Image (cartoon, rainbow, N blue to C red):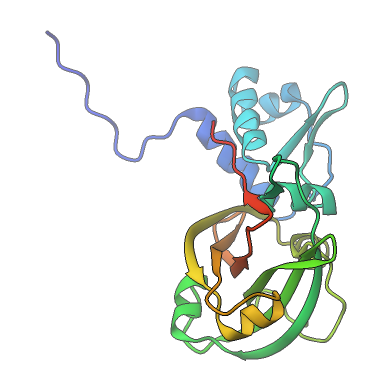
Length: 243
């Protein structure tokens, strides 16, 4: 039996190389959220590859929510408008699996220096400036989520200036700072409610909560937000579809 040829170190399929080129254009702002991309034919001619190679790269970027395909209109850079950002990144549903729309109320917002874990999770230098936000998210008027967020001040200067914050921060990140959240890495576990959290969620102390520990990543993989969400799931569920 003939032996297989050894893999070439660092080799990437051509469509992956095309995807990286297109991604660099998104990161660099060459194409902005909502922009229409050139056709597959135009991109293939420009890059010197087949339309099939371009299509495979675009398909993967669409599956990763970087792009949006609109029938009869073309391929667009995804926008983190309120609806897209909410239903792509907010996974709480009612008991029947229907998506829920939360309302947010900021409790505290401050500027400080990064603690050790904050610096580690955000991949920033120790004691770099960070913005901390604490807020309550309610559903149908009932407080169900207590959140603590940490953001690098260098990426979001001025966000601690007291401006009103939208329900979905990722919309603000894209609109005001040109930062598109491409994906988020989450860890889930059960935790007891502290006295402060129990008070804000109208619960008994030590009531069981679902903790969602999330790091949001920009298109270039840079962490831009660390968020801890403490959720009362008595009437809700965390719902994810695996494919």
